[in-house]
Length: 287
Image (cartoon, rainbow, N blue to C red; front, side):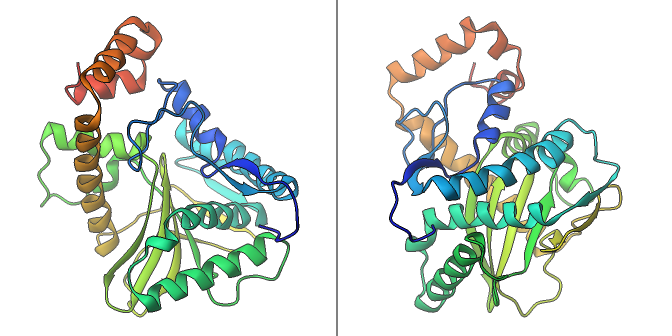
């Protein structure tokens, strides 16, 4: 990231505290949609950061985990106001930068790919101690819960569909480029209970990406926070459906031996069987 000559470490694309949290809720191995047959015990890693960058990222990850992620997941601040400092903005950009690194080469459309590459470089300079990104600086945080769709009575969910919604919100890690409306695009990274958004192009005022995070700090009022009923909420629902289909395809790619091993592991591990993950697997009809 710093462009200096150094030894690149195997860096977590998504921070380690996320996987620690998922382990606490059940499960010690992870599979990715990109490579479903590969088992990861500590999340996805790539040779991306040097020692200095690792330390800078780690400081902000610690702040986010202790002040926002764990308290929100434990419902300790969901009806409160949180005063945040510049650490939150840095963390959001660092997460989006790492997630964009994974997908930027596969973005379709020359103009859109160019703008995403420009955002990637602006964020790299900022993360390396440079100035605020001059163009791609509008960053948003979107806390989410299973109540996300409660104010949409026109949507009728089956029990299985609600299980997929809860699974995605509680456990899925995801990232993609939103570009369904012409001249409007944003890149997002999703971890349990949170979306992080960065505007790439925008002409529509009614696109609600959540709470804008200011570089110098600010305040989040979780009690009165609402996403609204605009296109982004419908996109998230569509995304959940698509991810559910992908997960089903993952299962199809596993051999019978792999499937039997997973089932045996869950049944014999009482902690896992009684955990949040175990409950989801039972609801999803895996056992």
